[in-house]
Amino acid sequence: MKNIHLKEDQIFHCVVDEDSSPKEIRRHIEKCPVCQKKKASLASELEHLGKMAGDFVPTPTKKPVLSLKEPGVKRFRLPAFATGLATGLLVAFLVGVPLYLTMQKQAKTDLTFSNEVHLNIVEDLLVEPALSEHYLDITSPSYSFFDDEFLDFVAPVEEQIDSSEGVLHLTFRA
Image (cartoon, rainbow, N blue to C red; front, side):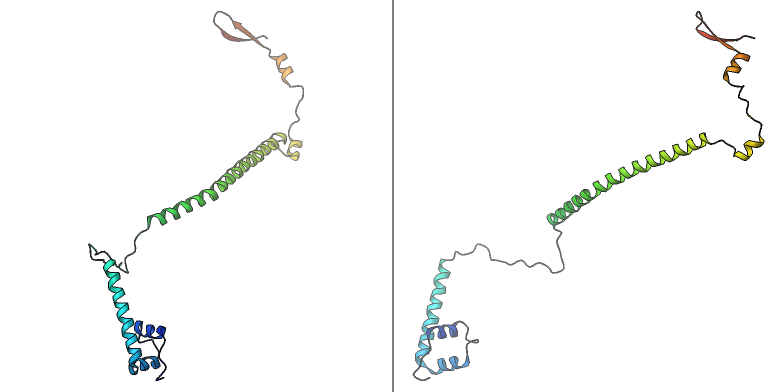
């Protein structure tokens, strides 16, 4: 490699990060005066470029400080909590209202069914005699001639309205 010199990108790589460049290139630059001059020239150009860039940067009024958050302290995030809470309430409302309406319909249906059962029980009690047929056979027979018409004949009730007093008088005719 005595007569062969390094390319500009190899020298540039060695200037920027000499530790990561291959050992052969570092040895060549140490031994070759032409490549050493190219490396020094390139380094000085980069340094001059950095100074020029620094001249164009305005001077800061305050010293820049990076704020480091303490690892154990967590902040409460109100927008995220409010969004989650609102979403949860919306879901609960959308699920709860149909369930509530269904339960109300079911309660009305149960109440109607209960009323019908109660009505059927009352009707059954009114239709069926209080005593069973066996007991009805040993009880005295009912006399059909003691009806309302017969009672009106035996003890008639007359209704008279006294116009002066507006009182209803019942008199019995015997």
